[in-house]
Length: 252
Image (cartoon, rainbow, N blue to C red; front, top):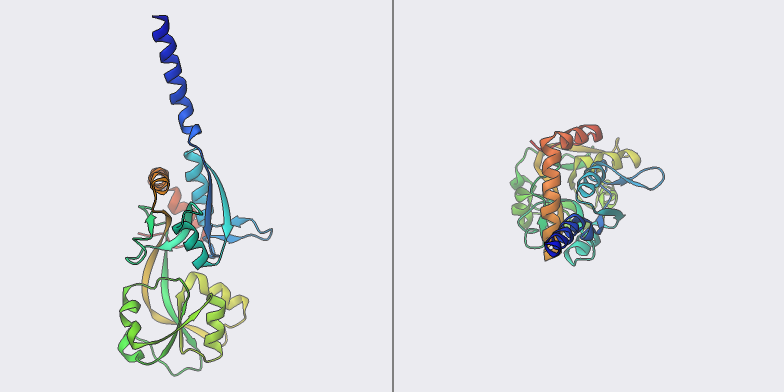
């Protein structure tokens, strides 16, 4: 009897300690995404993604670090298992084989064209009328099916980031720059380009941002854990409230 009680105590102790024995120091990486993942005045990461991940990870007993990288580098780090979480990628067919995506998106972006204000170019949603035009795209970004299907009609130039793309547009190296409004509006303001450049409507489309994880057993376990925590935040309305607080569009 004493041996049975002793064995039961040992089993209960292991059950209580198991979640903490599996606790990990996680690394979340991404590029600068205004309002989603950005440094504050002291260089400390902040934004919607930071608030959501901190709550979700804490609920699972893990610790968390954030680091900024160029977007292509951040994607490669997660794909190769050098980082645990990629912040904010759009979920696309091309990326599905590379990453495990969170079940729930946590923000939504409008993708639009930007043009010079003195340009005679008209945009009414018809890619056929842009045939032969020079269009700037940001390296590593996804733009949705409409633009991807029109790629062969366009002369594509690639910019390293939004600021580089805006300079290409300003200097006439491209006729249009495709970007998302959330990322681009603050860069135009900081570069004082508002009098020279303008957004064009209608939008190319709307894409939703997720968290993504490596396609390996460790990434699968983490994605399942954080899906549970993020699902709880969604059910309690905290995900939408945080999006409202950061002035980011929440998915319907």
